[in-house]
Image (cartoon, rainbow, N blue to C red):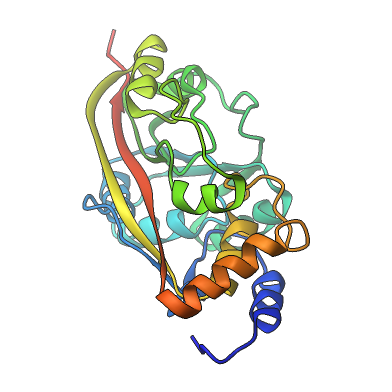
Length: 261
């Protein structure tokens, strides 16, 4: 990070960085986010060593699944599939995961999963837009597991409110872990474990903010540099004078089972 760079220069850089996939390495030195204590990708890799067939839902660019399969390389599942709805990520994931024998299928997050009933003994997902619980339950075999890390309610709300103003406390949020527990149980799944954490985020320059909002599009859905230039300038000045902008992400871990019989 260079505090001497102009607002225009930083914003232009943040606006030019490609947004495909879920590789966040560009943020190194420009933004940080604490990681949940459970280590999702490592744990997913351990789960894969015990699976025969596995599905990764909303895989993004395939980076997390690729890491998990690397940990499971000594004893991988016989069949691994992944779904993704955004065409640039479908292409990215296909190229990345081809060498691991993963079948990547284009499917939007709200569409039925394009697989037969009881096809998988493990379903994974990291940060799905939403969990389609009936479909997850349908494609799981009896005794199978859904293991996933979800984004919780009011994640990075401090950043969102800088751009959109005060956000209401929505106790019925679809991202609330207890509401998701109810929805999962209504689909016939049993919750073996559900953990939630609130994690510190820091943004060290306005380029990181611009890139983050372009990449995580549901934070400020209509975000463009032009539309939000006043808020960007204010935040740039704040970072320059007071230091990193601090927000907090929310994450929860689901370990759900499909009953036998």
